[in-house]
Every structure is written in structure tokens, then in C-alpha cells.
Image (tube, rainbow, N blue to C red):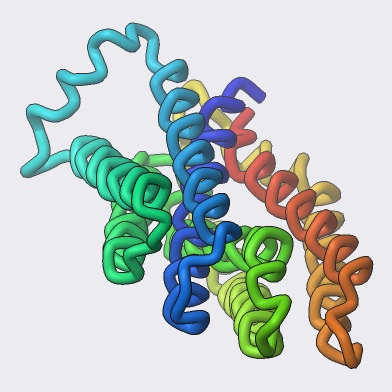
Amino acid sequence: MHEWPLLIFTLLVQASVGLTLFTALSAYTLRTSAPTLRVALVISCIMGGVGLIASVTHLGYPLNAFNSLRHIASSWLSREIVFAGLYLAVLGLTTLIALITKRVMTLLVLLAGLIGLVDVFCMSNIYIHASVVTWMHINTYFMFYGSVLILGAVLAIQLLLPAFRHNNATPLVTLAVAAVVLAGVARLIEQPLWINFLSQARMSDSVTFPLQPLVAFDAQSGTRLAAWLIMTLGAVLFAWSLRKPRIGRGCALTGSVLLVIAEIMARYTFFSLS
């Protein structure tokens, strides 16, 4: 599998967007600029920046990356680059203001998160229009936005929960669990449609030279199944933490680790084409 830079790029940017959105909601709920929120913003910036660097290393000639911006009217890649840059710019400015003034500007954080969602939409369309049969379906939306929800929820519980130490943490945990469950159920409901689409493509002898996405899809069936099982177990443990009088940190941490592993495995199978 030669697409590790894209795997790192997509997962890190989507995790960054998810954490940014949860940070905005937490800042609104707390009505205060807790240090934990500023730490979350810094981590969001780092993940987004590292993800962007990884995407550039995927290019054969990284210095030519700016040439992609000349086709914004017709190219999803150009649009993705623009919105990725805009997302990081707004997020970086918001983080800098928070570090200097010790205040988290909730509306600016929310704006960055919303721009990030647009960036994920553009990112999804790059693959949907890439003439690779296993990508050319709404399944790509479910996978990418699902990662925003799942990874954002996992990071929120691990990074933002301390800010609620003297407050009621149940709303944050409930929202995080709801995000994980929603992403998992939505993917599960959508899977039959994707499998049916691939079955029709198989009957039409769809070929993407020199890649063999359908052959790779069959070869990765075990990995996909394992990813689903791990994701389900992780989601169950993650949700189980709600049953504790106090948040079950160990249970939530174990579930979080399993969910991250499942996302990496699922993205690995997504980019395995031959």
C-alpha cells in the first residue's frame, strides 16, 4: 500500500475538524476559556498542519502544488486546497488569539469548524470523481464524515473532559457517544447500497488500469470485517462509560483506542487498490 501520506492526511485533517467542532461546543457550554480548550486548539492546529504536510509529500513534485490552484472553478482538488488553507488559517488565527488573550473566541472556533466541514466535502469529492470504482459512491461521504464524528468525539473525551471537572460533564459525553453511534449506524445502513453498487460494477467488467480496486476490495475483506468488529466493540465500551455515576475513564479510553484503530484499518482498506 503506497498511499500512506493520503491516509495520514485524510485522517488527521478529519480528526482536526472534529476536535475543533467539539471545542466550539464545549466553549459555548462552559462559557469560559479553560486552559484545556486552548490545548485542544493547539492540537487541532498541529494535526491539521501535519496532515497538510503529508498531503504535499504525496505529490511527485511538491513545489508544483500551487499549480493546482489555477483550476478552482473545475477541480475539486483545487477547491480542497483552498478550503484546507482557509481552515488552517482561521484555526491558526483563533488559536493565536486564544494563546495571547487567554480567551477562546467561540464563534471563530465554530467558523473554523464549519470551514473544515466544507473542506471534508471537497476532499470527499476528489475521490468520488477519481474514476476508481470503490471510491465512486456516497460511501466516501459516510466514511470521511464518519471519521470527523468518531475521531472528534474520541479526542473530545480525552482532551476536553477535564475542563468539565467542576461542571456537569454528562452533556459532553452524551454528545460524543451520540456522534460515535450516529457515524457507526449511518455507515452500517449505507453499506448494502455500496456493496450493491460494487456488484453492478463487477458485472460491467469495470477496469481502472493499472489499479485493481475490486481485486483489492475482495482481498481486504478480512481486514474490513475486523475493522467493523473493532469499531463496534469500541463504540460499545465508549457508550458504556455513560452508565457510570462518574465518567468511566478507563472504559472510555479503551473504547477510544479501539475506535482509532478501526478508523486506521478502514482507511487502509479504502486506499488499498492493488
